[in-house]
Image 1 (cartoon, rainbow, N blue to C red):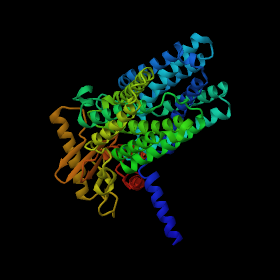
Image 2 (tube, rainbow, N blue to C red):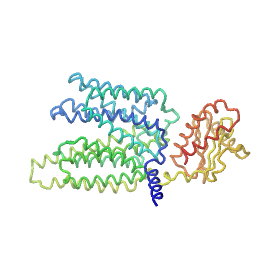
Image 3 (cartoon, rainbow, N blue to C red):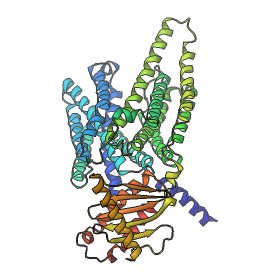
Amino acid sequence: MKKSFILSARRIFFKGFIRDMAITPQGFIYFLLAFLFSMFIIDYVYLSFLSFNPEKLLSILGVNSLLTILLSIIFSGFIVDKIKDRVKLLVICSFFTLLGFILINFGTIFETIGYSLMLFFVGLYLIDLLTILTHESTILNRGRLLGYVSSLSLLSAHLIIVFTDRNYIIIFFLNSFIFLSLLLISLQYEYKETEERLRSDKRFWHVIFTPPIFGYIMSFLVLGFVLGNAYPLDVKILINPTLFILILTFFFLLSGISLDNLGRKTSFTIGILILSSLIIFSGIFKELYSEIFLGISIPIIFIILFTLTGDFSTERMTLKYRGRITSMFLLFVIIGFIGGILLRYFLTLYYVLNPQFYWIPELINGINSLLLIGLLVWIMPLSEILTSKEADWAVTLKNLYVIYKNSTCLYAKDFIQPSPSICTQTLNEDLISSGFKGIIDLISEITKEKRHLRIIDKEGSKIYFSYGKHVIIALISTKILPVLFKKLELFTKAFEKQFSKELEYFNGNIQPFLATEQLILKYFK
């Protein structure tokens, strides 16, 4: 009984937290360090602004900081999409962010310049980092990966800042160490977009106005407006920063897990219901309302937003606009939030000056209720990005073939009848390998295109292709699933890395490729 319970618990834990993560420890550490750098800056700026008096916040420094954030959101996506070497761009952004961190200690003018540099480049840094994370993740693990690294980095950064009493020297040296680490990693790891991958037959605005993307953008605009309109202006802002960070960390983690297990639209719906309940019962929390309100709403909005923008920008027609799609979603949330705050401010001011309009406070709350109901109705017909067929990708697999560039079959896997799972050099397998290679070469010759053939759709079978320096991988499935493109791409890279010497000096011996079974278990289990 006890053993059965342990096995069930392990199965639930694996399914909910680890399943399909498919990221190396080195990759996870890279993202953790990269997010930690930005969290140090964001948390330090956030605590600094809390320590400022109201006059300083309303001075040139405060106004300039707000404008810088907006400019960063507007232009970051465009800049990221224009630069192909995303890893090098991350290093450049971290350098200028660190430079801004140095300048904030050299008088009023340099302080304003320093905060502007930090806020602009940390925004550009985050957009760029999210495009790298999207590239390295799949639709099955993107929410959890984002939740794990953001919650761990945020909590670590805040604890270090609190325990060191916001010591500038310590924070500077820690961020300098992370900067040097990212610089060294960039010499080994690169993510460069190619002209072939960035081809798109659609313009950016045509992509934005496609039904699912436009529908979700409008949803975030309305949700941002509701949150801005619901935030009470007479409540003190974050009187307990540590409680705020703890709530923020927990909901970052919870949101990421929910997105990958319950689906995007379901998680978004649950998030709206949680925020609705929070607004309805806001009077219970009193002075701690801002910590709870912002601590819950920020993760629900941003983890879902960043995961969705990643999902939307992995298709062939949207890869070119990956940064701009993220920026557009962020911009609409900010516009909605500012619009909501302004509406509440002016209606409240009008009520104070004209108390006979006793119904104005009820009107403010009524607008929120009406918009939340409308929002739930609005998202009902929107498509679920993570569908059940994506989650059940494993049952669609039929065969996999690893083909050397001279058409030799190096490895074959039958997922329906798992044994045998090696290439036995039978006539059938040789014919299949030669056939695939011949089809690819023939289509390339006829179309005169350098772009590789990626899929063949033949009734009940879908044949996916992935290309390495020495091999072509063919995967046969029963369905067209975007996640299989990503898994095949990761498998191809791992295969060529593991067998680099054997492929470079291939002499016809296929015995070394028996070890491919371990890669099959890793990427297609």
